[in-house]
Amino acid sequence: MSSQDIPEENLPAEQSEQSAGHDEHGHGALSPADEHPFADPGLPPHEHRIQDVDERAAKRSERSVALMFTVSMLATIAFIASFVAIPVDKSVYIFPLGHISALNFALGLTLGIALFCIGAGAVHWARTLMSDVEIADERHPIEAEPEVREKVFADFQQGAKESALGRRKLIRNTMFGALTLVPLSGVVLLRDLGPLPEDKLRHTLWSKGKLLVNMNTNEPLRPSDVAVGSLTFAKPEGLEEHDHEFQNEIAKAALMIVRIQPDNIKDKRELEWSHEGIVAYSKICTHVGCPISLYEQQTHHVLCPCHQSTFDLSDGARVIFGPAGHALPQLRIGVNDEGYLEALGDFEEPVGPAFWERG
View 1 (spheres, rainbow, N blue to C red):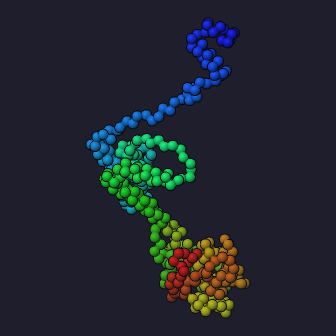
View 2 (cartoon, rainbow, N blue to C red):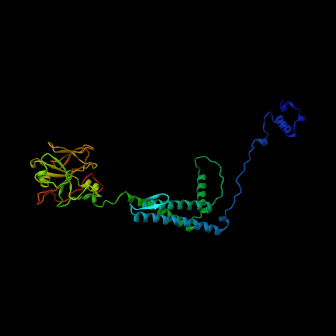
View 3 (cartoon, rainbow, N blue to C red):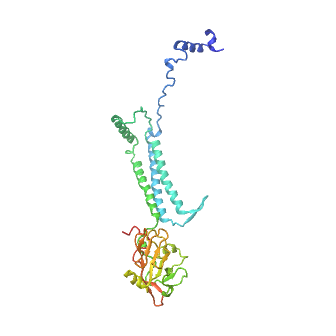
């Protein structure tokens, strides 16, 4: 049995009133008072912070923010000092990490402190000193009307005024100092790309009197060791594979030794810089620095296996095919009093691919 089947006089008072409302407004109809059942609660009453009512507390917060910005500046300076002063190969024991790079640990710690203090200072500033009064605004169309733009600018100016940036000079100056110094960390990191090249790319280990040493036998070369049509690879005297800088130096000083009949040499300077038809050219391709190792004795052409740049060793090692930009550098050679092949100086131009100093 439903409530509709019960006589009205037997219903509870509350249910009887609801039934009357149904009869007056129709089945299931809402009264005018029920059209908005959830009233707008509005904004809660604003609670003032201690910094809003006590200037001494505001000063304490200001000093705290300035301290964090100052620590950030000191950490940035420590970052730069660590980068310069700590050797790359130095290690330290840090519990529980164990032995780690002292440089990496110092850089990570100082940069982390610098960034954290800027963020923490900004958050503390916003939560304690900037205005926290909530402002309600009506929704408006996306397109900004002149009145809206004026209001936005006015709100911005009001926010800037309430941030006390102009009045809290200690915070402002230390914040500018921290934000100015932090980018220096990234600038200093650029140095880690490698040492400055200076003029190292223009010089190799070759110098006057340096013997040409066979790369395979590790013995000095005599003219009789180089047959017509053969290809021999040589390195400077004194350069050994166990040397710490071997790879860097051989990448610039590696030589190709080829013997050509003097009558077949077309380039006048090449003939003058050779010895009885023995010519010495850089083994490093002038395209991207690959080692050249393929020689065709009938044409006197050498081929780079990487991108097929081809050079004519009988004509100044000029490029006759491929992407290489210029000829292979030639090393001027001669014979010493003991009959060994020797260099008469260094290369006249940088070896390998073109670099930023070459026009």
